[in-house]
Length: 231
Image (cartoon, rainbow, N blue to C red):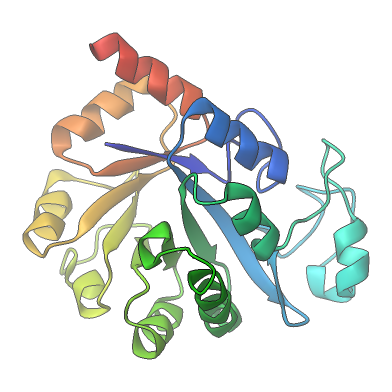
């Protein structure tokens, strides 16, 4: 079962910062998940539309130009990184799960992935996920080689069929609503099942027994300690 560092390792450092990402890598995560939004032609790594929760800024991100936005800092005195900076830092030490927080990010993300492919990265080094399923369709229609993950907060009436119809590689499910039926259905359709956000070792065991292929966690170290105790 894969350990996917959620927004880096947000249990140990402010989310979506380069420090948080580096901690997750140091702790052994081979997958890193981050959130991006399109701003002024760039892809900025931030979860919320508003700045107050994660930075010392105020208001909506689009109330500020890009240079102002980059000046705001999280509690560890780090600025909001660009997706390109995250990719360069990871440097193929882990697969990067890029979650699109808006549809406008889809095409710029394709272009940036292609840029790094030309410099030695591989399509398997990336997974692009989103609740904006139109964005995932945009990606598959433009560059089918990019793997996509269909995010879902509840169990759909047709289980994982919607993700299969999108040509997704995985279905990314909320831990509070996942059940055995949707996991089995996804696997029968050739989809991976990744579950968010899982921080309790008891749930690591539960989801492993259900056949989940990976979990997003704020605490990668906790995951690997749980894994070591099983041996």
